[in-house]
Length: 447
Image (cartoon, rainbow, N blue to C red; front, side):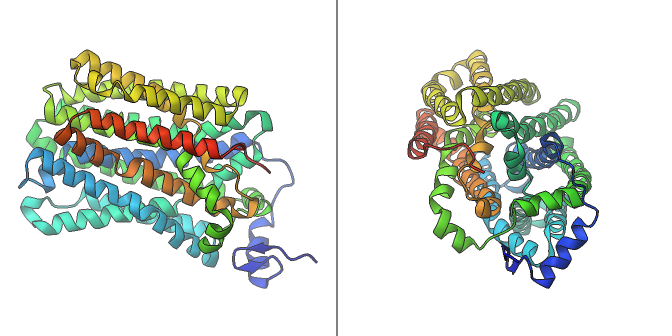
């Protein structure tokens, strides 16, 4: 009997045989359609992005006043964005920790523990006393809870995006790659809608006192629903069999770096322009309007919601484009367009309501078109054995390098040196994407 390795145990090891036998005892022999896998991907990504945007919006509208009342509005927002970035730093650490947990206890235990940690961290923020009641300890606890969210995000990788990429028809990989990306606009629309409603209906003192906590309660509830929905898919014998057949199990991070380090680096940089744009049309404009404009915040959020619908349409179109002209060509063309768009940031953001509206709507359109294929860049070129861990860590690094510090850097640069530096920041992301794509002549996934 041929021995193949799966994690730390060979396939003929008693521990591995017992685990796989229990999962596969009722496995059906029929083919599982990519659409079934896509359901799990969309559910998982939508719940994660909702959590993501609830915290991101609160970082602008709530945390500077609630946790940093002793600082100016600008400084408080910059401190808030610093804590916001902690999750992106912690995310790859969470991936490594929970990969080890999966090797020892299984995929279902890992996913349950990760989403449980996410729920605890999110609920903890909802109940956290403000600085006026708890002092500096409130800032420390907020930081720890944010780190907990990042660790949980890294640990919640379920392998379904990679499984979807492997099972998608060869001529429709761009289409299936974009499905999970729809979670971003869906999560933003719900989160922004909740905050827009609360801002419009509550007095400012009530919103800052207790109203802002409700979106975090909703995020906790959605986490619970998403946990059971994803476990229902991941723990079934049919999906377990597919995951095992494709060797979608953890590998040692050192071994991954030695054998697939180039692919990790290219995958992280290939969609850098898209990830940089991600926060420059969502979080950064909201902070700029909050600090330097008299526009209604609830109405501005409604405009961003419209932009998110446009982004969703762009994501769908990206799937059609990628299948027609290729993923690499699509990503390269959009990176070039983002580079051109970066030159108009100062003029549009300083152009009053009309200029800001154009910036948002065009920016969201470009975001949808480019971000729709970011998942394809993440899973590109990995050998089958390394795809599960490689895709997770590449995604973590892409978020860290491209988006983690974007709100902090963009607001800090624009406030101290002018909006032209935001243009340079976005341009650098687009150039990074083009450089990575030029090094990679085969972004399409190889089976």
